[in-house]
Length: 179
Image (tube, rainbow, N blue to C red; front, side):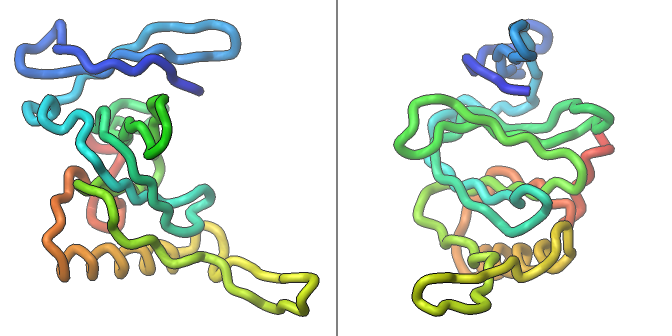
């Protein structure tokens, strides 16, 4: 599923709430969808510079993106009642992108740019000058990826004054199944 034309508007259902309005693209058809979010602070956070840390595909390594926040929250997605998502415009880009996580979510959004890069998930096996051979440090979906990411983020958060906007880490108690 792809999204386009993100917009944040006041909710037409609940006073004081906001919603994202976007178009979802299913093959050739486009349909409007709206997701309510409960955040009185959202107006103040729109276009705030943020750093987003999230677990990569197949649970293999922490990734980092810097950009401007457009929206965040949880919403129903497949069988998950509270699947976290974040919409943003990446640095040096013009179009809004969205990250959606479901089973065992791992996503943290913090204020500002210039936060540390995650450790590389690859290890070098050999390099003879013409051929380089490397492999991932751990197997896919291994708990070691979560442990390394938690250690890096928790150490950084405890050693620095960091404003965390949202923390959707299953390792810290967040569950996509609950409301």
